[in-house]
Image 1 (spheres, rainbow, N blue to C red):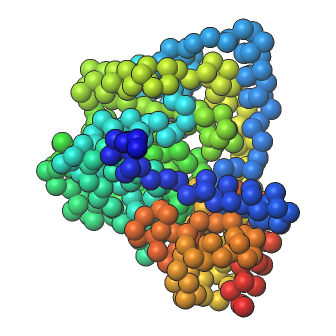
Image 2: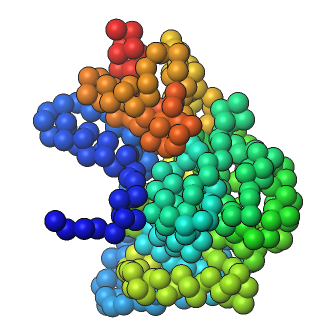
Length: 394
């Protein structure tokens, strides 16, 4: 019998992909499935971005690129960061990644080991906990509470820090809840972190443009007092509908501070994925520097869908849903239906033809909730809501 390293047995999964696979299989069987499970925009990548990649291929950009990304791509990220946060970063602190997950992987791998503790949001993106457990570190959930609009509490977060804490993971706007943490709470957290200089921070800001109702994303980059221990995750997937392009970026402490983390992640890139493909990087430059009309159009559509989802869910007996302030997810409370969350999600897929995700797939505090992605058409969202209501009425 083959024996695998024990760490691989600790790897979890992102169940949204399992639900996608099952939904796809049911579609192939002829079933009518409305998929509100997967977190990806239903919009096409804007045409000028696609054309930039095609031009790069035709111009002969077929070879390796630097492990940390083309300088032109990193400089585009610098321009975008300055425009959105008012903070100037060096291209020598920017890493171009094959998606967002490699930044999580690198940061958690750097700080996670047996005996260490890593704080992460719960409910939260499932890969956080999976990677923490993979490293042998102890995952410490930071509660994201419905009563708090699914924003984190600075006081509650700081109370969880111990001498063993190595890394704090933050995510706002948040997956799966759509929660947005206000600046006053983030400022409290940063102030409290002054007493814990041994704790690094990874801020997942992949949904930074996706806020509603006058809310504004607050980047952790705007707090210079933690810059020497801050890793920021971002990318192209959500903002420009480029999930399949596998294009992300991260901003690391400058090479002269933060334990030279940047050089460590560059070496990891060399050992793991070598580099990000050239045509996609040229597409990434076009996305940042080109017209943003399609992004604005997509955000208006998401806002309309958000209102439809929240109103529709709150009209269903047994379900209540706080209004998400960011991303493109709703996280309704289904505890009054009498169903366990994962069983309800499975039954809705198999019996009602609606794909969504049970809250426990996002953490131990996810029971009593389900996640719906409203990155789908208004027509499909309305069909899904009708089916959910009819199923629960039975």
